[in-house]
Length: 596
Ligand SMILES: *[C@@H]1O[C@H](CO)[C@@H](O)[C@H](O)[C@H]1NC(C)=O
Ligand SMILES: *[C@@H]1O[C@H](CO)[C@@H](O)[C@H](O)[C@H]1NC(C)=O
Ligand SMILES: *[C@@H]1O[C@H](CO)[C@@H](O)[C@H](O)[C@H]1NC(C)=O
Ligand SMILES: *[C@@H]1O[C@H](CO)[C@@H](O)[C@H](O)[C@H]1NC(C)=O
Ligand SMILES: *[C@@H]1O[C@H](CO)[C@@H](O)[C@H](O)[C@H]1NC(C)=O
Image (cartoon, rainbow, N blue to C red; front, top):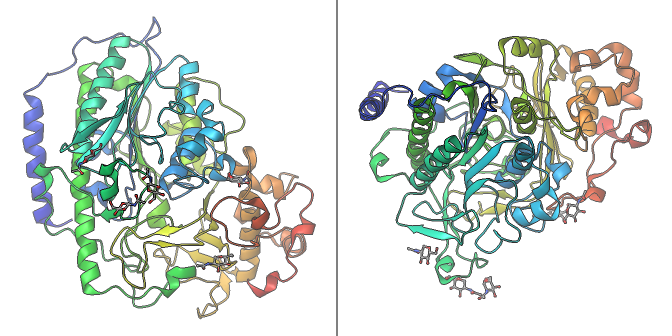
């Protein structure tokens, strides 16, 4: 960050802090933290939309730093499991991978709120379980896509003591949002800034929750920094007419419009590279022109400006908790649904890929016993959050979670460095969008953007493996290639054919077998997939599996991934052989030597 920028942020920060200091000083009305049911901790979950970790957006959020990063733990290897809003949010609130929710898209038939409902998940997600555990639950902002002015009451989202949802098709329209409170009809906020509207509602729920005197969960899901989406047809009342849907850069509040005049997408090694990279359609992208780059830099700066209102929201919420005297008994969690790319690998603004920019996302947690000003590299995923929150609430965990509660103490985090699993699975179905400029060779959406991917991060390796639905394979060694520019499995790469000091083929076979298990895993198989491959229990990591004594097993027995065809949703018959315990041999592709 440049000096001028820092000065700017500091100046605005100082004036805002001064403004806040004229308010209440110190705790009012301190409520006892023990006894009479008041001892269980509260949870405030702030969930932004499409926020990146890799383009430095957090550096522009001084209140997040002051209240959360400096008082909590940052999880630097936190991942979403599907880099698309609705599937990711459903996985987050249910604790299940998208292949187990079968909510894999943003709209029906494969996704959206109606699919969430028809999958029976409206009775099986976090707020319902938290209410069962005696919590009051509140939520304002975006819940899921296709949760709309037409679908919000068929049925109402279950599990909320109080709710005020952003509704489609107005969710992403920053200056003309529609919210829908409890059982009331939707209300339009034409001309008001969406994030600020949400902030008022957030404070209202916080007050309500405090007054009620029960432990509470509050979810706050502002639209920023998602792109702005509107359609001229919406105002004529036809919400399914998306013929002229317009994607635009996000919009900031008026008071932030002047900030960061020089902000540009960080020019990392993978930014608009001279050499094509990635797989599938991405490898055919042309280099971006100066005009496209200029637009994308503006898009980037608008994201930072839009996030300023979120930053202020964090400040207001934390100060309110402090005023109520309950900050020390409240977990404040900050994350986003998925990451974002702008210009990396020549991509136009969007998400949905399995590159780090899209999947490795912010997660910061502060709360009782959580180490302060601490960062950890243990591997965590969105499917871990529902179990984590139930654990915080002291509620029983469910045995069908695909994730594992995240440790939140110094000891737990230290222990996890040694014994927590080292992988995360990422999956995607359907289209890959372009939310930036449309060019004749770069349309709004690419079809067949269907793949299974995986990150494996151990002490001596840091790998990314992906198999597309057209069976192209990608493998990156992030220890030597953090920008994921060299696909070690691409025929054009002058690869040394070794990885981790071993023949490339040997490592690839292990990775492919691991992902083969993970692509359809359920429950504990998702967190301990090696057990499925080695039921004797003598393999816990890639390192263990690389032992020469398993060479024959991986060359002759452990199955591998192969799609039959590309689909827009989870059509299991098109996804090739499926892992079944004890039936590995029959799944091995006899031609596997050709692609490794
Ligand atoms: C869809 O909306 C566009 C833009 O408002 C309008 O021109 C068109 O007639 C609409 N189409 C239908 C089928 O309603
Ligand atoms: C804003 O949305 C409302 C519907 O909620 C619509 O009636 C109105 O025309 C929209 N305003 C603009 C400027 O398009
Ligand atoms: C709304 O627009 C969609 C798509 O353009 C069209 O199929 C539908 O008939 C329209 N509905 C109404 C009520 O005009
Ligand atoms: C998408 O995949 C299907 C089946 O795998 C194939 O028939 C079709 O040509 C592909 N379409 C595009 C646009 O690549
Ligand atoms: C997922 O949902 C789609 C759409 O309803 C359905 O066609 C498909 O069979 C489902 N997949 C699984 C594995 O249940």
